[in-house]
View 1: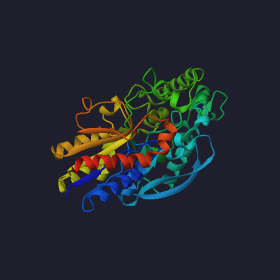
View 2: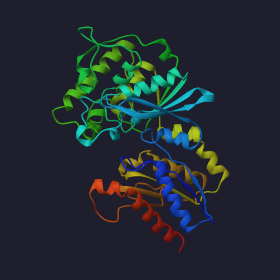
View 3: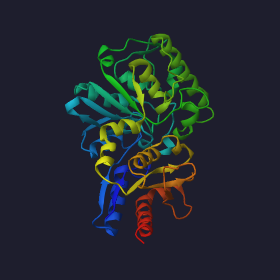
View 4: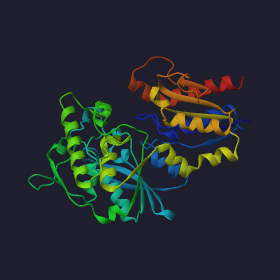
Length: 376
């Protein structure tokens, strides 16, 4: 019987990578009860980042009530690897878009305070290394909400604490000293976004619209991040605003790079290091890789998760058949040579909200159709 590896990203706002794995695994077993199946729910640093560690039995889940993007309490979680005092933080848990109804999205007001509270819980538990997954953010505050929650002073010209949200950054005039305990932690930022902080390709212009930005709020948000960048550069002597990835999570990457000396890494590379996917491929002959994400488009070819895992599979076994599944398909195999086939799970055009509600059923049906082709 053939062997399968199911290793997707989440379908953002619809189903998690873990649920994807369960649905596809069940479909395979219905058709091939004796098939060998490995499941590895993955994440680029956004939704499902903690689950990827927990499902692989590498980390223990720790629940915490914290502030959501607009301050309302949400039940979130973080991951703990006790033997190395390493914490896994997923900023989308507290400060992600999925925490808000579409009509409540407003990056002038949304903030990352809750992510700071998750980090503080990890520090209180004795974390010496913190891996912060960035992606799916509802915010554009440069990480200031989180950094404030960790005890770094951000003050106005009147020596008062700055407010929360992207709009408050324009009033920022002074950044106080960073507590020594924060500088003694090793900070790793996991994300697959390569955008800089400012400009046409920056955090505001690229991701602001999906967070509720309007033409009126765009210049306020951009000027706020520019002000933050100038103050951090002035304070530290380091200018990170042009570095690839500094615009991740509404500029949160920049704030942590600038003030906490955080290092930025590909989310896939971080996971691969801990999950040791190379070893899985070395120890087992994988005949079929099934991967996917909510949207496969031109960006997928630039190192996004489905492309990376497919490339890894081909490196270990050139005969492995790699299959990509998605909701929205806007690319071709010509642009993704690592994949042998790509399928949208939508059999016909449908409204986005309806497609998201039907994702589990559509994914199961599509998988069954693919298996029918494979087993003919």
